[in-house]
Image (cartoon, rainbow over all chains, first blue to last red):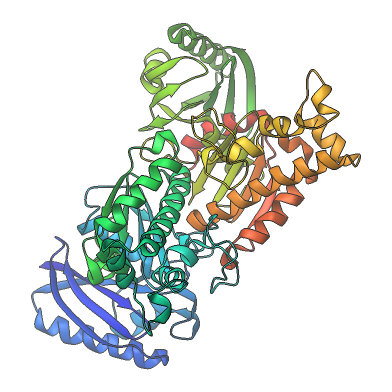
Length: 302
Length: 302
């Protein structure tokens, strides 16, 4: 019988659910709403899992790996999940009691890193770091093929690393000068909004700023350079701790491609310890499916 | 038969060799010179191991865990060891071929952290970081009871983390503004030497500066405060990566005790992500024996 596993990525508005084979093939994928009502959410997930398994009668399900946007302890419990208003929810218990399969849980950014390590840009690499640069900045640290979850689930929370950029700008976490204040899409937009033409625009996206930089707008060039420098600086600091073989850049801002990757690499070289100078940088490859692959990897990789 | 293991800490001038029981008892300890001639060094180590085992005829030796001051790959090979002039030495092979026991090798600072985790200030704690503050700054990262060695052996090299202190001061590594430039004994002395009475003294130690600070010397107080702030800043950055339960301070400067510990904790609180705020700080307990215990821990802890 073919062995398969569910990867379940619970977000603030939707759940992405995929069925993945031990060989890393995505056999089925669906998306449906998530709710603040955790019972409704887990009932739906279990229902979808049953529907999927009915369509794959010759497969044996070994478990479900679940990603949740919050700090996770003991591969089971999310301490708090701001997006869904959940506090101390034993996700493993909620889902395994409904779906009758073993459930393992991880932080969503950590799980995306594990997915990229198993089937994405980090394939074959046992030590990697992934920075997910979107509205905020998430991170995942993989050492010897395993997620570093940390003692209170804050492993890989590199968006809140102190960096010497915009140290007077407030972060959502309560501190000032965190990495994501400068380098997230939100930070890029905030910096650009200081200048025309962004100042006068109703809605600015990070893509607008990258496009303007590509077109030669001086202020946009400076904003992009600074956000990349902050990411390179943080990457150098991270490398002195866990010395990864690769650093992957993912999330919405990574759509900028080499316009993000190249200056981050250059800043890294300027700040990195010589023994880490050969660290490779690459763009993540799995996009929104990274968490699904990561969930399956919790069961299919050791 | 009682199971024992050798812990061997190879330094730039001496080798510390200890015999440790599975229960964590240090049964024998000796110290002898290390040499740039690696054959002479390993011949001596193997001789001493034989002598020790003769004195413990009812013990079974399970192996030797060896610490070397340099980056280690594959628990066996030191890539370069500046203090001894060694390049690409397979320490495991050199010693196991002479001593006929399994040999595992780690960086000396990493091994000290593992020793503290097994039998010192971090006993019972699976996730910890140790900062060894001496002439330079070494670090050891223990996640789930295991050393994070990194892809090129630079795991835990936090002395070379970029920090926003003395960013114009040259570090021995070739970069500027590394943590150890500000926070090592060397850095403390360099900063103090800018001011009287240190400027006029032939020889200044970090202890002199701490003593002067305790006596109320304004400049010494500022130097101590800045070096502690840099350590607290780096600790906050490290915590966003691996989120340890504890951070231990060891090395020569840690003799200052709470005069080091308290301001480092205070700076950490100012820079740390809220989820890491409860990280405990403590002084290392095993002193010069930490590496010996760490060597034994490579065999006696899983």
